[in-house]
Length: 248
Ligand SMILES: C[S@@+](CC[C@H](N)C(=O)[O-])C[C@H]1O[C@@H](n2cnc3c(N)ncnc32)[C@H](O)[C@@H]1O
Image (cartoon, helix red, strand yellow):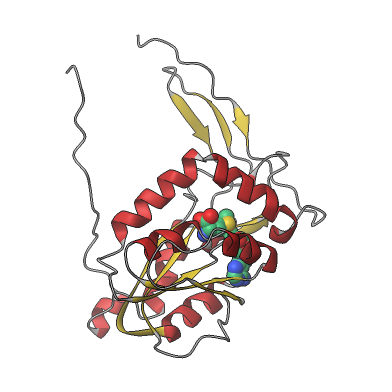
């Protein structure tokens, strides 16, 4: 029997009301959180950093940029970055952090669902870190992103995993003492907010199935080659890192 770990009990409670803070109201809190150092955000940034190709001299748009965490990574790697967020307060915080690269990051207040301020085919690539689940109209966003990308442009995104960070998910010890999560009503796509006073998701989240995200991308023309392959996916691809377990 493995040793019991400390309980990880907890709950992501969904509430239906809209009287919780939108992103602009918690922009200062969010900026403080990231400046202090947030483990989940560091992990997301590392994932995004691995997903993007060499961005030197590329034009990249960072969608739903928040206080600019991912935008600064891209600029630091030599990209010319335009970073977009619908919250003017978030953009104000982002500007305060400056730009690490040669070309200053251009910050724009715009809605990802249309990206009205960005020209067609302006970018080699797009990134969206922890943003797609906050955008209400996923269809609009995927069309807007596809429009501003050049042919062969790419999109790299990181989302909160919808199979686990779902409304009403309950964290608890599994039968063998390992951390586990119980998810109910996964197939019910809906808007929800966390009731945790310090929860990032108190600003609201759109719970969508993983398949909804992947289907949205393929119908936007991402990753399709032949008409048949647009209708019937023939490959499943993943990138895995070797895990070296010490002491076994
Ligand atoms: C969890 S934060 C992520 C911010 C940043 N990408 C990061 O990794 O820290 C989600 C961001 O999405 C933005 N957002 C939500 N809906 C949006 C929309 N329709 N258009 C643009 N930004 C949006 C919010 O203002 C917020 O800054």
